[in-house]
Image (cartoon, rainbow, N blue to C red; front, top):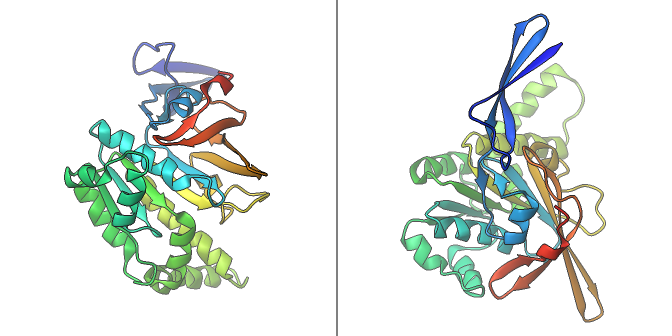
Length: 286
């Protein structure tokens, strides 16, 4: 079988290409058309270098880590960097209100209040006790605001809330009823949670926007997210780790998975500096 490679433009050496479509030319040949992968810089210089220039545009990336690893700061830095380059961003929060996020940002020298007033960042607080139809409300917000970057902090809380909220009462319950007509196997709460998660991530993916999703990760956990599903659906997984030994603190970040690009495979040291997260560039092997 002959594979014919076609590029949308002359392939420069500093770009990664991904297949846009492949089709059968004859019984002996397949033609694959490749397009260049655009990049979305995270604002963390060492991480962008480890990703060969940034996240592939449109990727959905899971940021996993335990308490105190800096997941929210990581995502906020991603949005602020975009806003400073005139890219709109939406921060979907389940744990911190807009005023709390503004206060957190000031600790790193980020004037979130100004960026919000200028229409570059929008904070959407999901009240887990409200039980509103969150997906429909979010769809209206994203279509109107038209962001280039999205943060969901956190997926763990949001999924749990949807199990007991409006989505679980209607859509998820209907899915379980349909599934039970096909298979007599009893449906558990875990399966309902997975169905809700698939629907939520599919909804976000439809916007084609570079997205970061945070997930709690217990120490020494074998999986890469709290639900054990997100890491398989997401395009990328970045794991933040924290180790305290006496009065010393060691932090490391590892890119466990990233579609459409090569990346640094080992663990990298990072610090929580007064200007946000910084990664030791000297650790990079690329």
